Amino acid sequence: MCVAVSDSQRTIANPPGASDASDVPDSDDDEDNGEDDDEDDDSDEADDSDGDDRWVDVADNYIGNNIPFTGSQSFNMPDEPHDNPSEIFKLFLTDDIIGLIVAETNIFANDFINGPASTPAIRNKYRTWTAVDDDEICKFLGVLFVMGIVKKPRISDYWEVDPVTVTPFIRTVMSRRRFQRILKFIHFDSAGPAHDGDRIFKLRVIQQMIIARFQQVYTPGREVSIDEAMMLWRDRLMFRQYIPGKRHKYGVKMFMLCEPNGYVYNFNLYTGKSEPMPGFGLAETAVLRLIEPLLDEGRELYIDNYYTSYPLAQELLRRRTTMVGTLRTNR
Image (cartoon, rainbow, N blue to C red):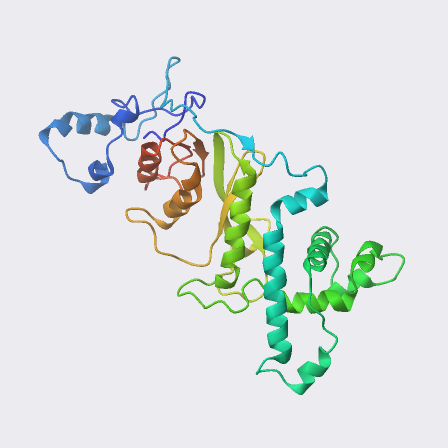
């Protein structure tokens, strides 16, 4: 069976009788349905029976489904500063995103300390709390980045003064108590209503804002890929996953659409089974939703056999997108 490629991927063979995109049957004619629509399909059925399980070598003059690439690979923010790490940070975490974190954190902290559920003990413990601002949240996020690179057993260890293991930079940015207070109150949707079936509704708004910024800043070229990644998490979580083949075996699974250079253009957190698109499975639905903004421009999508299927290849071809990947025999 053929899974479509351009002429640059000259390693995929069509079965006998299939030469271009026009030979790919519609989903209603899928051989799995076991029905013939009319007598004209008899010859096609004979061809399929001869070649289903037989590899066909690619001829030297083979030309695949050569769909021209009509999109453009581009950096879309040339006028915004982007020459150092601080400017790159602000390029993606915009003032709107930082402002949302500041506002929601202050709302949650105020409600926790002074709200109807508060107690005299809570008000006394946090009596010195002051509202955060944009600059302080940027510093807080910067400290988190450093903690991801310089790993220590406990948060308090980053503020220790032992000359052997000291991390002097962090102590100059923020005190330990202030960091831990912000960590307690950090919020992204402090009062939003719970949405039926959405287990990350408190992160949904900021996730959408970050993805929108990723897509505004840069447009991928012709070749893109989709795969899953694991974000390390060993604590209690309803949708925590265990994947033994990953570097981080326990964590939150993410479906990610990336360019060959590693740039993340789109992603989605897996929080449990959701409603698939009509006619497709869960993995196929994840692919179609991630690549939707890049369809109809002649791109090549590289995926592994967890996602590949004949109906998915048909749908992508219909949207002028080719797919490269191995295919399981049961699909």
